[in-house]
Length: 230
Length: 230
DNA sequence: GCACATCTCCACCTTTTGGGGGAGGCCAGA
DNA sequence: TCTGGCCTCCCCCAAAAGGTGGAGATGTGC
Image 1: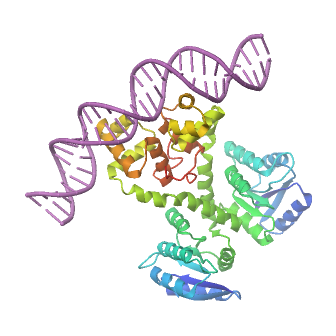
Image 2 (image 1 turned 90 degrees about the vertical axis):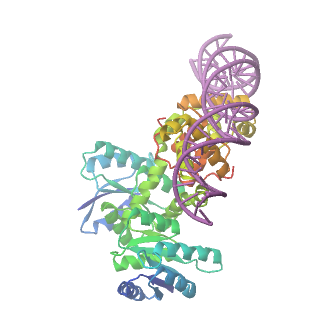
C-alpha cells in the first residue's frame, strides 16, 4: 500500500487529489498539510512514501519544505522508504523546476494533469522512477544536450593538438602549475613549457587562464569532475 | 493525423508496433525501415511526423541515423513539421541515452512499454513534449541536480568575497588579463592586482588558472555563456 | 634513405603575475 | 567620534609564465 501525503494550502484542492488517490486500491492518503511547516511535521510523523507538494504556500513554500524533508530523510537514514516528492503546481517557470530538482524532487507535474496520469505518476515515482510534465522533460533535454553539445565546434580545434599537448591542457584545466604538470607527466619543466607554448599558439590563446576556459567550453573539462581542494 | 515511421531491423517488431499504432484513429504508420540507411531515405521520402527508432541495427545504428535525419531536417528547414524521434530500445545504458539526446531525440523508451503508454508517448512528442522512461528521467534529473548542485558548498566560499572581488573573479573567468580587467572595470592595474591577490588568498587558490576552475565549479561561470573568440 | 611529426630538453629574454608592505578616501555601525 | 571594512592606488621584489630559437631522439610513411 502506497502511503501518500498531500500538501496544498487550499483545502479543496487537497480533498480533490485525496479523493482521486484514495479511489485506487493500492494508494492511501495518510496525511494532509496546508503549509510547508506543517508538511515537515506531518512528514516526520506519518512517514509517507510519496508527497504531493504544492509550491505556493504561506509560511514556507513547497520547494523549501521539499529540501528540508529530503535532507532530514537522508540524514535520518534508518527509514525503509526514503520518501519521494512530486511537485504539483499550476505554473512551470524554469526557476521553479530548477530549484525543485535541486531540492531533490522526483516529479514535477502540472495541476491540470488527468487523474489517471497523476495516479500513474505516483506509482512511477514510488517505483524509483521520475515523472516530469512533457514540456519540462523537453526543456531538460534541451539544456542537457546544449551543455554537452557546445563542445562540437571547439572540439575540432582540440584535434589540432598532439596527444601530449592535450594531456598538458587537461593538467592546466586541473589548475596545475608547470612544475606540477612536469611531475605528473614524468617530464622536465622545460618540456612542459614547450607544450604549453605550443598548445596556446595552436588554439589561439594567450595564457593558461584562457586555456582553462577553453577546456571547460569544449568539454575537455567538465563541472563536477574536479574537487576544488587544490 | 499523425504520420509515424517505424524503424527496427526485426520485421516482427515493426509489425507489432505498427499494429498498435494503426489501431488508433489519429495515428497512421506511413513507412517502415530496417536499417539506418533505409530510415534516412524513407524519412526524406515520406516526411513522417514521428519516427520510432531502434538503436541496434545493421549498416547504421539508430543514433547515427537520428542525428542525420534531424540534421538535414534542420538544414532543410522548409518542413512544416520538424519531425521528431523517439528512441525505442531493449536496453538503457547511459551512453545510449546520452548520445540519443545529443542527436536530438525527443523520447527514449524501453520496448517493454505498455501499448497505451507508447501511444501516449507518440502523442506527447507530436505535441512538442518529450517522453523518457521513468528510470531515465530519474537519472537525467540526478545528473542535472548534480551539475547544478556542486556550486552549493563552493558558493559559500564565494560569499566571503566583496562585490568588487567577485567582479574581478568573473573577469578572470572570462580569460581577461589584469590590464584588461582594469580597463573593463575603469580602475587602475594596481587596484586589479590588489583584488586578485585578495580573492586568491580568500579562496585558498594559488593563481588565476585555479580561479577560473573555481569559477566554473561553483557556477559563477558556466559553459556556453562565453564565446571562446578571445 | 629521407622527409616529417612528435617528444624531449636547453638557454635567453621579456612580460605577467602574485606577495608584502603602506596609504588615503569613503561610508556604515558601534 | 572612532573603528573597521572596502575601494583605490603606490612601491619593491621574486617567481612564474610565455616567446624565440635551437638541438637530439624517436618514430612513421613515402
